[in-house]
Length: 89
Image (cartoon, rainbow, N blue to C red):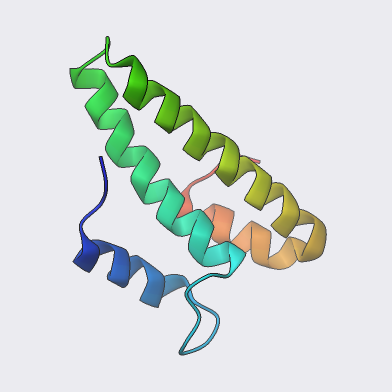
């Protein structure tokens, strides 16, 4: 399950640092959060889809690693992005 390209572009424009930014930690966390929400809905409809579950867990782990990195490098930005996306920690 992937998010649509127009939704992804909108997410990138909302969370980027500068005009050409598409790969900063903030952008990656925002995109992963949207993908996780999409996959969570899929998993609620299809609880026995173990392949998608594996992908969901991989995305959650990747987001946690990026969040830990951002918290270590720039705590203020981490707090802002966490509040914006509704993430705990």
